[in-house]
Amino acid sequence: MIEYEDIANGIADSIAYVFNDAVISDDPYSHIDGDAFIVKAVSYSPMFFSKRHAQRTYHFDIVYFAPMEKPMHEIDAIGQKLLEAFMYPIKFDGRYINAKNLNSVKIDKDFHVEFDLIFFDEIEQREKHDTAQNMELSFTVQCK
Amino acid sequence: MGVKNKGFSEAAKRIANEQIVFNRVAKKYAKIMSAELKRIAVNNTPVVTGELQGAWETKPVEVYPKKVNAGVINEKDYGPSVEYGHRLIIRKKYCGYVAGQYFFRRSLNEFAPIFSQMSKDFQKEINEELGGK
Image (cartoon, rainbow over all chains, first blue to last red; front, side, top):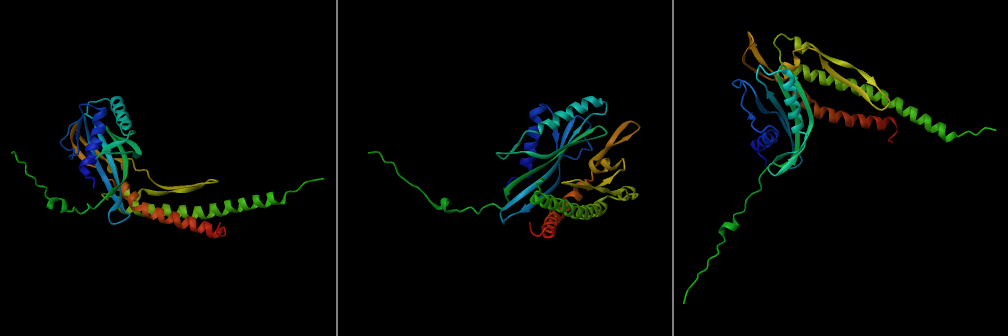
C-alpha cells in the first residue's frame, strides 16, 4: 500500500524539479511568512473493488504562498509555472500518475493549484510466509 | 413524376421523437440533480451569519440538441475565501492565516455517487421511453 507520505513527497519532488530551492511544507501555514509551497490533501475517497484492491482518489490543493510585498504579475508567473509542473506525471513509489482535473484559483496573493490523483492500489498487505526463514543451508569447508 | 422515399420520412420522425423524449427526460433529471446538489451544498456550508448558506441558487436548465446544462451557483464574493482559506491582514500587516473549509469540495464528493446513480436511472428511463432501443 502506498503511504500518504510517499505521495506528498512525490508532489514535493515535482515542485522541486521546477523550483530548485523552494520551501515546501505540509504544516499549517500560520507561521509561514512567504515564498513557500504548501502541499495539502483536501479529501480522500477510496472505492473498494475487492477486499484487497481499491481505487484511491486524493484531491490535493497546492498553495503558492507569496510574501506580502511581491507584485501580482510575479505571483501569476510563478503560479503558471507551478501549474505547468503538474501537467507532467507525478512519480511516487515507482509509479507515474497523471494529475486529473487540474485547476488554478487565485485568492488575494495565494495561488492555488488543485488536482485529483486517482490510482489503483492494494490496500491490505499480503501475509508473509515464514517458510524461507526456517530453511537453513549449512556447509563445511575442510582443508586437508 | 415525383419520387417519395417513405423510409426516410419515417426515420426523420423517429429521430425527432427521440429528441423530444431526450429533452423532456433530461430536463427532468437535470432539475432533480441540481436541486439535490443545492441541498447538499447548503448542508455543508459553514454558517456564521447565514448569508453564504442562503446565497446558493440553482441555475436555469439549458436544453441543447444533445446536452442539457444545469448547476448551482453561489455569488457571494467571499465564498472562495471561505472555501480555500485566506490571509488575515490587520493594518496592512500579515497576522495569520484562516484555513480553508473546502465545503464545496465536500459537497461534490458527497454528490458524486448520487450523480452516478441518477445517470444510470436517466439512461434506463430513456431506454424505457424509446421502447428498449
